[in-house]
Length: 292
Length: 163
Image (cartoon, each protein chain N blue to C red):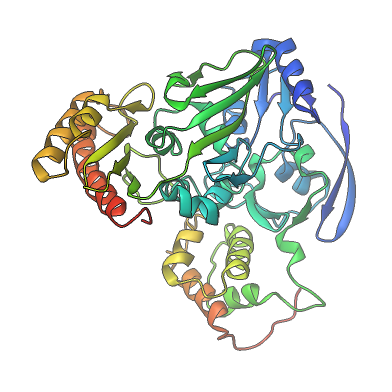
């Protein structure tokens, strides 16, 4: 690893100022599980590393009556184990379980996973399906961005120089709603997802689908919503034909590529399979309240 | 660039080290402090040979800057034996022949020790998942899993004195 200037701010404004001052020469260090690998491989050679982990208040999970707030520096391992998230957003805890090894999950942060903007990012599809909001702080002040508007491409986000993701907020599951995260990889553990899918369904008292969100990862330059598939579902009562139409729409929304890990054709087939399973499991979860 | 004075609490002892900010905890443990029980395998966070406990939790020390370990407690394989007695997990690895070349062993033992401390009744499946980040290229894992299960079940023959 090449030497760099190390800055360890103790407040958010200091961190924002340091990152803004050094612009493209600076990187923010959170968990470091991707950053240090890239720096060692000389994929990136930052002149300045700003360690944001000593800033108080950027980690932790808190639930109010309405929403659940997750600090950006919350460890993926804590997302996995959190009783609050297991009750209010179980698919997010489930997704955390699949990220790397336990050693990596004790370092990696949910914010880092999002800011890295990998198309296969383990935490992204569930947050898209749950309609999460990202709270950013920069030199211009604060702004809130829906998670689906955050990603621009592989490794690219809407973050401006000096801007830091500080918090993720989401509406916890209401009665008669459910969510599911499913992923497929060649090895069951310690492997990036070839395809990952998250689904969210909310039902009314009569069983009609009032809200539906389906998110797909690793099949486009960014994690995406399958909006046409969602539109198929809303306002209808679940039945196999309806789910089949929605699944077809999800497959159509995917734009997978062939790479070292999979072919495009295989990824499309996995989108079909995982979407079918995710919808069935999500419907069952919604019908049983919201506990998976 | 200048060196930073780092105070690192390793195995209950404080070490003052002058190190550049780009040095990893793994490098400083091995090269500056001389605790070479922690191994450098892939240096990429994939193999788990460099696992240490940071504030009691297993992490890959190749992915931690040494400066980031200041004000935290660090436990390496050298810190497990107490009063001349091996830790039960070390004892279990010996009794079950759970090592050949030994390169992965320190990382496996500290990871397995914390796994059972966090959940003493871990199932075999949970042990496998918990050790997924520690690669062994010699044993085929069978003896390793047997050693951890024996430690969980309290089925150890006797204590061996620490070297």
